[in-house]
Amino acid sequence: MELARRISKIEPSVTLAISALAKAMQQDGKDVCSFSTGEPDFDTPAHIKDAAKQALDRGITKYGAAAGEPLLRQAIATKLRRDNRLNYDPANILVTNGGKHSLYNLMVALINPGDEVIIPAPFWLSYPEMVRLADGTPVIVPTDSSTDYKITPSALDAAITPKTKLFVLNSPSNPSGVVYTPDELQALAKVIVDRDILVVSDEIYEKIIYDGVEQVSIGSFGEEIFNRTIISNGFAKAYAMTGWRIGYLAAPIALITAASALQGHSTSNVCTFAQYGAIAALEGSQDCVENMLHAFALRRKAILERLQAIPGLSCAKPEGAFYIFVNIANTNLKSLEFCQQLLEQHQVATIPGLPFGADDHIRISYATDMVTIDKGMDRLDKFIRSRR
Image (cartoon, rainbow, N blue to C red; front, side):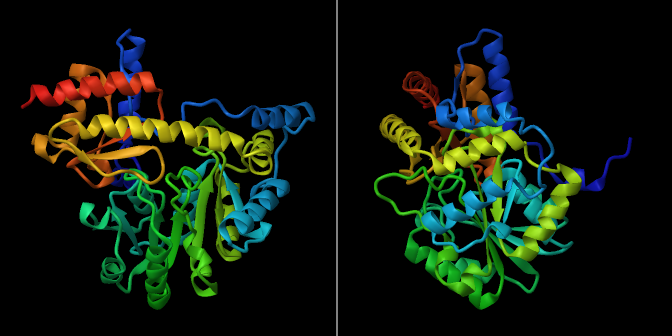
């Protein structure tokens, strides 16, 4: 069978592959400490589940509008105005099957063959693959600890060519956990406006931030940058709704119209009754978010203390999300080999930095319980010391 050439351009998700292997080992009775998945280990809050149940009881089980339930689009627009100072109307919102789907819809609706998309490294591993599937060209701009894994305005400006159409910004970041400051965002916004390109701001981790750090949307710095900004977000991380598959795009109406048409011919509407759970997430009490954030903060502190005591490893303190990006260069192992050996020899699942654009790092998720953190760090320490 001859497959489409576009499929040969992409690589399978290493994150999902390692998570699947870890789960298979657990099913075989092995005691695996998993730090691999970007998924809160909390249940979806009760008031969100209740809203979906009530929608089911009311018979909200039929086809819905391809762009999303009107009440949810309104709730999202209200949230963006209130929390992010972004003046979107419901017509500027597209509800999608998860945050990942919002980004895929964006790339397919916006990118033409040969268009360049600037992606700072380290990056969430699906960004370049989505660009390739849209026949675009990902342009990777490396960053490192000297700039806190953030792209600088000068580096962004230098990467822009006449073919550049889009810049991908992720703050808080997966995998590094960095959060761009308002001043840093404003400086990037100036480059974007001056060079007349677009920016997609992936804000899926916006509510998971620590130590009083301020999360700001790049589109909030004035009309010129707002008109060039596309927002991608969702409910998976902040509300522990990973399996619900509800995300959204906020963008100029022309792009929303195009992406809605694409969605209408690919997936049609998002699960109707699940959207009523998303409405409850936005309009109900936010105590559930604060409770999860408090737990993540305690875990971050505990795992950082353990990692900083392990010789040969180094890491920066993440300001957001629930990941630590660990530099393993001193082990003389590449990231895939490191993760394979750690999993096979000590039953600890982590994610290689290779698909994130940093082969001398691994990603550790602390979206897990304290018992797993303590046990897993003991094993990681043993693994590192055995190599010295």
